[in-house]
Length: 557
Image 1 (cartoon, one colour):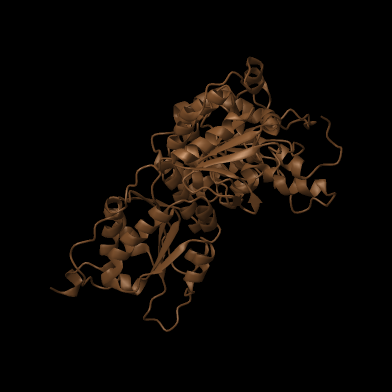
Image 2 (cartoon, rainbow, N blue to C red; image 1 turned 90 degrees about the vertical axis):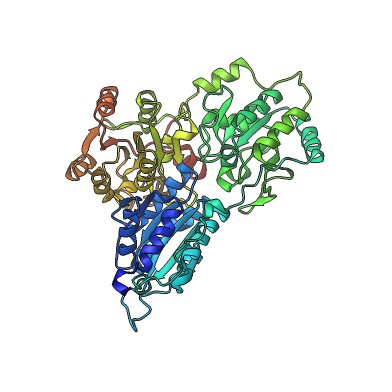
């Protein structure tokens, strides 16, 4: 057989990825990945071709979170890899399993202008990097990359020199068994009876209990169990930011705990004497740096409980168990109570209280971002998928209490803005039959506005809602609080509607909310993609910024 008739290494690599049930790949092509990507597409994988490498990885992050499976992206070597460095730490900290097919410079070249030592860059972010330099072993190495991503829940980047990819395949004809057929399926971990008894004694002595659920509770299906525990203790419910909406229908849910806690939630957390954290990593921002519940002890229910997290002591009492099994065992062990923190008046306050009642003077022709969110909460259909970006505006968008967790995605562990449009594309790829709504800020959207063309080309059904305050809001308010010049944080109100139309999308500017129900109905009927630009006042400061950076007395409240 002539070499020309043989499959190439990139053919076998594409088949190895296809065998891992890779059905969507986010890609930006270059010399070191384009042949492999073309073959993967021929294997039936949907390729979403983005305009920036960062966006390929960020979209794969949202796809992985939404589908609870490995997200896949591909970039070329050198500059393609360096563009990943902001997204990778976010994926690592969010515990998202990803596999990235990255090329490497050709081994046969004595010099190549895009050559760089890629491994140290990748490992510095906390991701894993594997050099694949032996063609015969590459299919096994691909399988192992998927195994590692699934088991460790972090990104794995594989680097393959593109001259090796182009060689005729001389290895075995059969591929190794895929990772999803090898990965152990451990059963949920039940709690030890002695630990349950100790936890029950602690809970029985508490008067004001808050059950705080994180993504571990979501993944374990522990929502109903947490509600039952809170009901039996007469306590309240809360969630971390990524798990927001898990208890959206419960009248005693006080919302998010942490930097995004609404007013009533802050009041009740300050009164709590026991926090039961279920499936939470107990990150710094989830507890307000330890200031949100100064009177409370903490009991953590988790398969990997910790005493110290991100520089602070978080829990002295632990119950090692699967979130659902641990909560169910604890609830069963508790005696009946003749007292309750709950009351009808409390339920009414939780239902009717504004997330933030502070009064600001709004300039004519501009909107209060809090009123924008209230109007969107009332008018957007319940079955639409929501994506919240980062930055100052994200506090306001998080206050949508009717939206369930499974339809509201937030990933912000690295604190970077500019990811929203990529996350929306990832969700749209994972839920092609749904309308996706992206909530973003003007500064964040501008960072990757080129992806509007990707949305148009791939016919993604995405409505982008821009909270446009003409500035980098967080920086502006921090500078103002310190009496510093605002230069560099204020840019003015650019015409996002015009930009959208330039990319072939619908575009609309909102300076009042009167027509919003009509516009939502029209978009629901037409579908497609659009950018809605809401001009809001930059005088409105989120409670998070107000607490951390007290402002001079220009506001009244």
